[in-house]
Image (cartoon, rainbow, N blue to C red; front, side, top):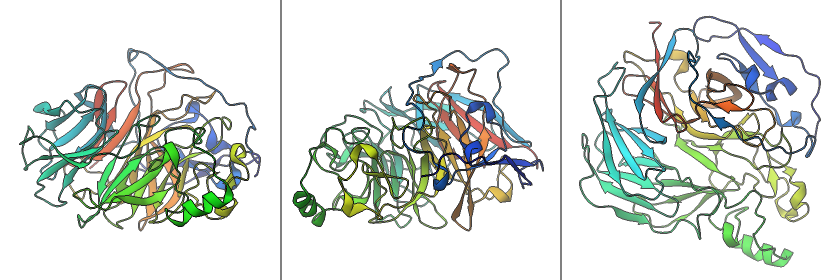
Length: 449
């Protein structure tokens, strides 16, 4: 693996709103830290530019949450505005119902709230609890897809349930119905579970993160035992306390026929289906303790039956030195992700920009691109993340580039005043994103029409 080559900072013309030149950072410059963040900065991290394991000493540098400093404002591109939209209790996942109502999972509060606002409004007129008493809700989805859903699905660390629903309901119509009673053996480690439906409504996708960093507690298997396990399971599927972990699962809408859709994805915290291409996507937290700059986090299209490396390999065919030689049968079989983020940025939510009109709609060049919330690092000496980024797609295919879209949450090398989580496109074309540290749902609108 290459150590950082001495690549220069490259300036390229961009079609970004406002006509400003975008800075594309590649090679070592693409890794950077929060001090190089600014709306319009574009990064492209290539696997060939990754450092060797332990090229830097693994660091622990948790951020300190501080009050918003006087005069502190978030920054975005020219022509856009970013403003607080609503106050909530640790908002995480955000989804927009077909009628335009906004559903937000307030995970630690154990509830899902619903907000309602007229198109173009700067604040909601309704903000109330749709359902409460749920154990750490995260993923929220509507079923069936289309204009008239009948259910709201909610995922918690153990299970998936659904509540009866019709457009405009501000309270669940009845008690929950269990769809998947047990997603994994326990809820140690990653507890977020996201949901997405295929556009035809026939398949329910469920993301389940790993129980650990690199399967430290997973029992060892002999080569013969490994071969026997692999014969009856998805390629690269883990076992023991990691069975059905670090996977995207798929089931029928009623929870039957649950199986692994793709394996080896350490923590697909954000799960979405691109409506234009029907590709399943994951925004993924990769492993820790290999160094400040290894491995990159990522967002990627997820192939059915695909293996993405965890725990034995990372970013394609790079073997984790802590598990060296344990799975030679998987060498060359791990898929390289599409878009690599600065290591330890902690991507959580992902959505695709689909609006074709509305008072807050973005310019046409944004249509089909994706937005990801980067929650921010705790295990990197120089802070990364704490921003919303745009993934560039061309005819549904990612270019590998991503652009800083909203920045400004970091105060200094130790403190921050917010942490983005998830993103969603509102009925009026605005981009919404949650901030669980600042208890805020934010709204980004385009005002340059």
